[in-house]
Image (tube, rainbow, N blue to C red; front, side):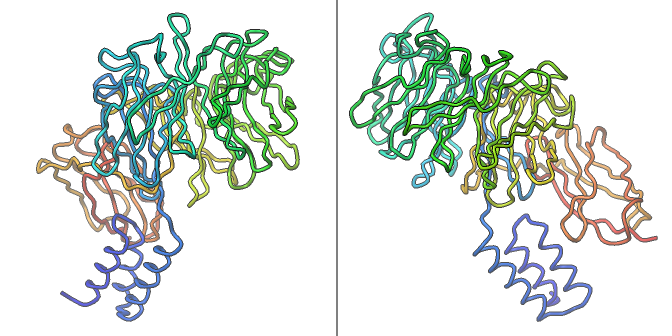
Length: 506
């Protein structure tokens, strides 16, 4: 084998599945610079191993698969969606957000059903792609039932969460010890201290106390903000919502880098369209920061999120306008708030109890919507806080899960899934070389539809992406310059079906 090809294979081994390998290959191929190629390989590998942390996104679909909900991952580097698993005997992770123990790499989540259970707490092993029910809720007057939302992994290693179903039985605040597999109800909501904590996520603040909200209960039955002390097992109502300061908080809190807690209430305020507020855990003072009017946005149901630029973001529906999601941002330093209408219209989707999260590597925010997309069953998107541009990355479908609900988990754990490539897959591309227009044939396409062909230039930039609807498609690169291009065919579940190269010469 020519030494220049050995060098290009060396680079590919450094960058498995990454398009950077093609850049190095073209340098070595065009110039035959053996030493330069080797040095570039070593330089890129060192830079990648030292500075480039590769993060993955994990999420839950509330429905689909075998009608139980599914678990999936998304690779922001390779733009790859992977359907990982049905949720086995669990079902319906509504408002579900996975939390991860970074030592064991186990992930934990909640569902509202599953076989004969009225909800489950489950563990997902991403190394072996196995989910396990740790606890099934059956005795609603003791443990409560139907836990909407996600658990909190506290500093003491225990999981804390709340469950719902107040009209039938107790809403309980409970802990689960992963080391002993013991679930312990800690207290019950009795209206005075809150009630119906649906979708209301918990946080542990810098004072080690656990904070949360409930949708109802309190002096006005409009919800409360409460504190739980894990050392004394005491819960305390800190704030009663009364409509002027918001009502019916349908989400969780965050603690920003200024130590204040921030959150949304779905209704209340001047226009009764919801508010964005802060709470000071030192002075016990709350402040309404923004009152939604329903014209640009209203009825916020998701959690807030503070990005690396210091701004706080949230997804808020535009219910009075076109019904599609907007991004609300607030700068705690300047006090400036902004509402950005997302641009994809019906192709983008509606917002429900969905949140934003940031990839620390590329700085983009990622989120999901439970409706909309090309099938009306939800999508995964990115939002650039610099350019304010949003991009749909994944359209969810019933077969692999749909109606994503909750926040994505950012993790360094590499997803484990078996690629779905079979011997029936056969690609033909002609003419090659061509003048910018060529035909791509995918024999056996019916076994993989819908699939997508993605075209990249030698710099790794995506220049074309097209859904393959039939076995033969005409691809038009007439607007691109002469050169070598690389194609990838990706199945609906994100698995790579094949790849190759095409040359444009005029």
